Image (tube, rainbow, N blue to C red; front, top):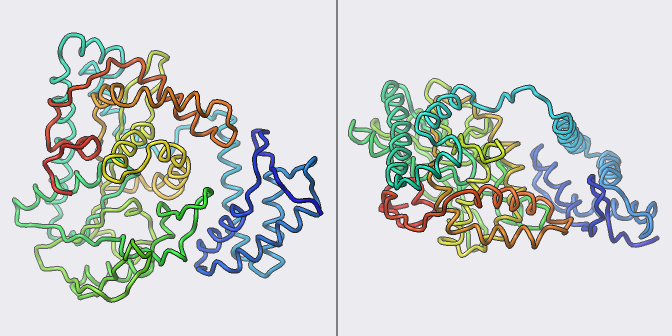
Length: 446
């Protein structure tokens, strides 16, 4: 038997083989069907490696599809039919998405809020902010503070509408779910909504779903071996559903406490009950994930979704991607508040994005309202602060097959940032702006 040292990716690139990824993939499939024991996944991953070593060699390395075939066979052979089914379904779904991408299908996605986008695009066009060139012209004309004011006003108007919709149903609503992908501005928007509701005698009581994380040792890992807090399966979804259901009918519950220092959850720690004027708030990446509140009637839910729906084209006529805006936002926030190297954020972003596409984006059109948190002017601030870094990363990852995704994102962002007239002075950005959540200097308490 020969030790497996490399694997062939779908792109044809030859990369280092890492057996940990096999165990992680099998464990994630087990979690999807309710399993929480890592040992079977670790044991079966060794069986997969043994089979690979008997069939392949250093001169004839396995393809990623070969490995997945063997994983399926080992799962079934060991009697884990349900896990194998989940693994196969996910694999088939990924293949389908790749085929659609390769075909460059012209069919519009069902996950895009087209009506909302038309309104945002109409606004951008009427304010000469639908292309980088038009925004640059306004900046050269000394209008940057005006662009800031116009952008902030549009966002605040969206928050006003969301609050009004909630108040129209104030006699029925028991729980508000504020959801959206990473760095979409959920925290700031939640504060602003509560400020508006308090004027009408209502207030939020937050259910911190972070306390419902499973013990760290039970967490799934990403392909880098890091614990994955992005997936909804990292949370005790049945317990959240049970507690939310009870709170909405006036019962008292005891919520758990999660110690992030030790990665340990303690059950039945804090009493919680809603008063008549209080609304339960769930501010979470996965607030719209069905299993989280499956037993709670839609009549008493208000579902809000956030996304920076920027409608601005570069000089090549391509729209700036929302995920790229959020990536930059998270880099800035992580570096400021979490002492996290922005390069690490870039290298892990494809995994964050993959989880969003599976567990967040599909539910965007199930919401009661969508708030656009994009600020067209923000890219001018990023050009000043981040362009040099993206230029460095583009060169660093250019010929690294393991960092192909990081290269593509860095290069794409570099391309549009270098078109923008950079602005260093952010003094015209209000202290209560949603953007302050990421660039710092907020007057709000998070």
